[in-house]
Image (cartoon, rainbow, N blue to C red; front, side):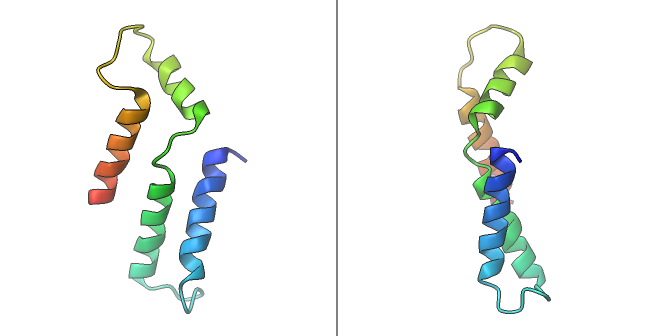
Length: 80
């Protein structure tokens, strides 16, 4: 299993560990687990960073790093 999948799975597990009735989670419990999963994804893995670089293909300098772009996208997702 990938590092990111493990990280997100742990975040979801930890989020539900605080729920009293985890067999019948509330809508808020589900939202909290989703937020925890997104937060866990904020730090890209080395493989993700390498994949972004490889996918770019322009060989042009960037104003920001792939990591900074990824973190900005995650931050935007967390604001919603």
